[in-house]
Amino acid sequence: MNLHVCALALLLFGSIATVRGRAVDLVDDSNDVDNSIEAEEEKPRNRAFEADWLKFTKTPPTKLQQADGATIEIVCEMMGSQVPSIQWVVGHLPRSELDDLDSNQVAEEAPSAIVRVRSSHIIDHVLSEARTYTCVGRTGSKTIYASTVVHPPRSSRLTPEKTYPGAQKPRIIYTEKTHLDLMGSNIQLPCRVHARPRAEITWLNNENKEIVQGHRHRVLANGDLLISEIKWEDMGNYKCIARNVVGKDTADTFVYPVLNEED
Image 1 (cartoon, rainbow, N blue to C red):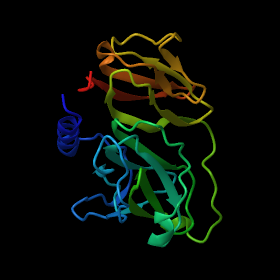
Image 2 (cartoon, one colour):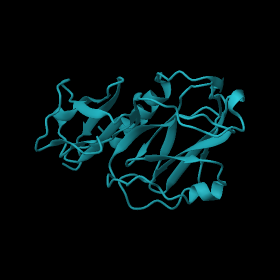
Image 3 (cartoon, one colour):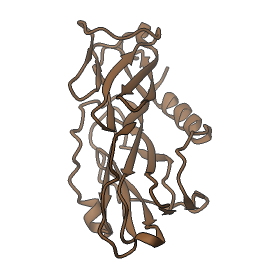
Image 4 (cartoon, rainbow, N blue to C red):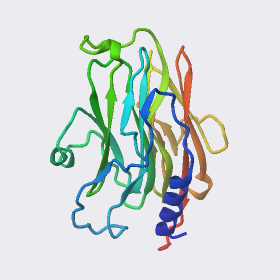
């Protein structure tokens, strides 16, 4: 199947799929108003695609109200060519600075990939003032971003900020929903976790069996799953499971190997 056809189908599916959200105290969780911004694109390079592309599949809400003692999770999803990266900026920055912001994610060399990535930012402390949290996505020459303003509980304004005490169940904060690439490619599926104490991470393969370290499948120290030289039989759903003494969280990634038309 042509990569461009796959991209269109996956983007359409992502735009109509319902996404289960976390429970937070919302002021305005409506995405009727698009708060995303696209930076001006540079001249495309000589790549598998004519130009870099990146689109939101889920924009974060424009405003949130923190409730007393509540942990807030702000979710951002996007899909694009290569392997898009997402980072969060805390505080207000001018658009020019967001465009020039250095990414804290290491870009993967995957010119033929199409990936849908999900990232969330956890606020596990009491805010003393309203604060802006910006989801910044980047792939190649393309940058997009959207911001959420979080308002503190009325009872905590102008008081020192402090982290909630005690253990916290794992929350998977960075993962890929879909990863499409050519057969023979090496792919790395992220699974980054916010937890206290630290979570233990395991992966289930597309047959729902726990992955054992081997020649083609390796779970890295940071929790990511590395699959070398993907084959057609690798297609399917892979599940990351994060556990600690408080609880667990899971995240699924669908891997779709594509036949290289030049083969």
